[in-house]
Image 1: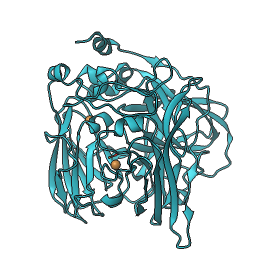
Image 2 (image 1 turned 90 degrees about the vertical axis):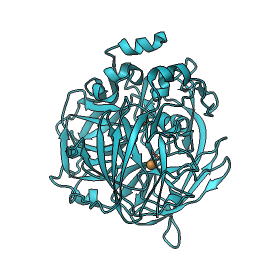
Image 3 (image 1 turned 45 degrees about the vertical axis):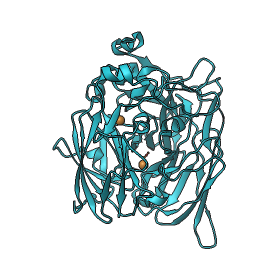
Length: 500
Ligand code: C2O
Ligand code: CU
Ligand code: CU
């Protein structure tokens, strides 16, 4: 066993105070340009540039229509869209609409490869409830490094429901998207990817970014504030809370509003999960609040092997400071009820998935090294090891030419996901918004009872899902189910399925 690993196992409390020296960037919105047939056109170009993730340090990063991250796509429900995705990178990529119910052909998974210099032009319609979705690359075995380099953005579906309900909806003012990510930099400011053995369990960083800036502050009005939280990290699970332990109200999960707001003081958010929360700042003028992650309490459930956790999993770190200004004058409020409770009838086939650890820890440490690919990143992004033989689903790794499962179109699949491995995995399914029917036989907690597309399955847990499929995915362009810890996904903890 290496010394650094033992260190990771024995550090037991860390507090990383916020810097709060730079303002929170809010990604610009793209509303799409309507043509004569009222199709909305959106253009994204993946490319690279310099960013200041950390104050005073220049880092080479990747982004859409800029050096880092991407614009927020605002998409009205049910309208035809024409997307234009150009690849200005030196490597192949794809663009996946995470959470979107669209046919496999335009899903942007590993089969929709965009080679360098090429343009991908899928036409799609998002006919599903309003929600906070996102987009990110999904090339086979390279999703981790490409997202880590900076490729990701928000995709917000609008159906007017939030306005009707009186929820805050002024973008960037009282309705703010927050992409939470962690990164590691070397002494010269380069992004470091996978250069330590524990990184094989999932790449985690020690710098905490919100919308691409380390521990920023945001000026917000004294009123109800809506935060659209996205865990855009490769591997880190956050346990979000305010430093003063105040209550907040979860109004939406991954893919839409909940039946009613759920009051919480902390919220676990796994990679790729989203939540919308409302915070009452009506009486807070002149004060400042800190959003942080306090993971210590959550850890025992998440990892058994010390290698899977890190020092920050047993400590606290600040993410964002909210500086409350004068009242907004808006008449937004917290409604008692939001939408009718979603219901589904399981009229489709059953399937059981098992999330497996493929090798014992000793075996992995002995033999799992050095077999990895070399990943390409922005110039100067240093990358080391690549892992393999780590975690799988149903005992095997994803292969581009193997369809693991078929499920019928127009039916609601009844899936059970059992985690028999040593750590928690966020399980994600393409092409659907699902409902959690049970966790270890118990009904899901209230804030998880709405539409979801990622579910954290803790070790030893079995989670039952009801997943309706309204679109087709054939063997040429199948859907994926996978762990959303991107290093697990890239190592094959993924499967392919068709809907016909
Ligand atoms: Cu967020 Cu298969 O992806
Ligand atoms: Cu997805
Ligand atoms: Cu995993």
